[in-house]
Amino acid sequence: MRKWRKEFSFISAILMVTVLTACGNTDGESDSDQTATQVEEGTKELTISQINWAENIAVTNMWKVILEEKGYDVKLNVLNMGVTMQALESGDIDASLEVWLPVQDANYLEEYQDTVNFSEATWYDNAKVGLIVPSYVEEVNSVEDLNEHKDIFGSKIVGFDPGAGTMEVTEQLIKDYDLDFKLLQSSEAAMLAEISEAIKNEEPIVAPLWSPHWVFSKYDLKFLEDPQNTFGGIEKIHHATRQGFEEDHPEVSEWLKNWKMEDEQIGELIEYVESAEDPLAGATKWVEENEELIGEWVQ
Image 1 (cartoon, rainbow, N blue to C red):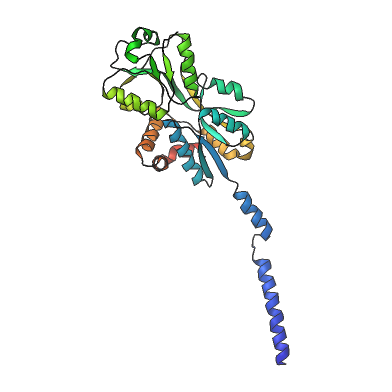
Image 2 (image 1 turned 90 degrees about the vertical axis):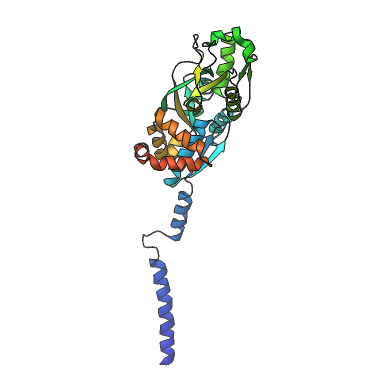
């Protein structure tokens, strides 16, 4: 009798384990189904190009904050504009958040329009590009005045990243106006440092710049008139994605199309990012203070 009870207990234990194992997945998924789901969820990864321009650093970090709050793992790759386009074409990155059209990045649109998706949607509609001088350089108000006063500038236009669309347009400007100037290549940070130093010493300097940019709130600068309209008029800022992105991430694709910013908003975002020790911290603060606006984009 005692032996029978032991055998019954052992059989009952086996049955209980079997039942618990079968019932452990209450939603009806098998262990393999759960693993597959976890793998699928783990593919919510995005790689975005970051170009070392003030507004680009600001918006890429802003979108990193927004997307990671939505469950995405976002990596920012620091690239120049030329490499960004190549990486979009090859599919090595998912998106670039800053393409200036119709003039500044027209060369990239022409070269990559069949292999990269350039969004028709714009997130900023009042951008401007041109040569600037400090306002105290009163004798120079137009590009046409530069040759006459080339000596005070040392016949140099202080530029930034080689390969940037604005740099290529500036080279075209030099040809269009037959300027006896050389365009110097460096980086945005180096160009801004030279502008700062020149203004500190009240010296002349000429450089290609764009708005929106925080530098206009710090220094009194003026755009030179461009009678031939080489730099174009009002520029609009678009985003671009690799082919297949919209199918792979339809939700994010729609959010990017909904994205709109005005002067005050982008200016404040740049200020937050520039003044923070870490760009992501500045972007996080701005996102927290603008939940209603962001809700319009990611609805």
